[in-house]
Image (cartoon, rainbow, N blue to C red; front, side, top):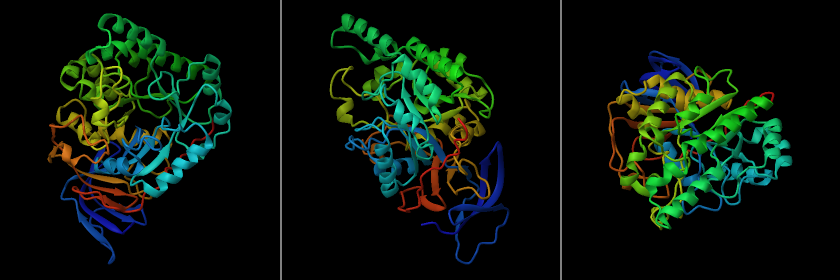
Length: 449
């Protein structure tokens, strides 16, 4: 329910500045930002107590598993985990069962999320080798972008036909988001590993099988296609130092080609496969400590524009079900993403404004999200109150994702999410998700292609 609320004594973190202010929320919007706002008679008053107030995180890459894989998660369960993590808006991927590769499935997802999602939502349309006519006829108002798997990851959505790729990059009416890994190179690496280890391939081989070279070759192709056709390209979950040479530093504004970092690449490296095993198996693979250091530098200089999750829940039974090849790839991350990102501030690797830019401002700018991603008068009131001196103990019993576990279990983060508002409605009070019914479908200004 969208109540009138005055948030008092907050430290607004927004657009590179920290401002002590009150904020008036009314009819789902930020009505006023000023000192000493007089609360209307019908308003709820929330004392921020000097804590930091951030725009709600916009996660541009999640897999919520609905339809078809709902034993792992669905829009209901995963959106509530997201809310508890400070994610007020998400963009969900098309590799569900059936995949979101036609208008009917896209409409179904939008309708289903309208019924069950606690966070604002949008859905990618999926490309295949044979749905170029669907892509050309796509209603841009229904989607955040077009997802192209230029390397097989989950399901059968690999797009590897040269003429199809050229047609996609030439004709897509919306931004193209790519998963870039070379499938032929990966298959060759698997063959080599099988010859060496048989069926008992250790997970420590994952970063060699899903190699840096396999990532670079695919990303280089995507960039070349985008330049050839003047396409808007966003490369997801960049994992290697070498790929960073493909991107330009600086502000996101004016870029046709952008790229993303994922929070798990900032907290794990390949030395930890021995400890975590298949729990940190993901595609692309977590790479070396040197790659990780390069990712941090690229976030700081703007070569990597967005920080996201690639939230991909699997059950523990699936993760532990067998050998390396049969264990699924992906990590559940939405409930821990913001405190994990803020931990890099405590570690001195990123500053607070860089994190906020990566999780809120730049996703809003890159995807042309209408009136979200900033604390501005007239904008939707999607807000997160953070205690930078709080603590978050990651334990299994607090996990809200249906998969029931977190790769950060046992970690003690030095920040906490103390409150979350979605379109002006209190959605999380620091302890529990509050049913509010205020979530909305994200709107985009895709502009001229």
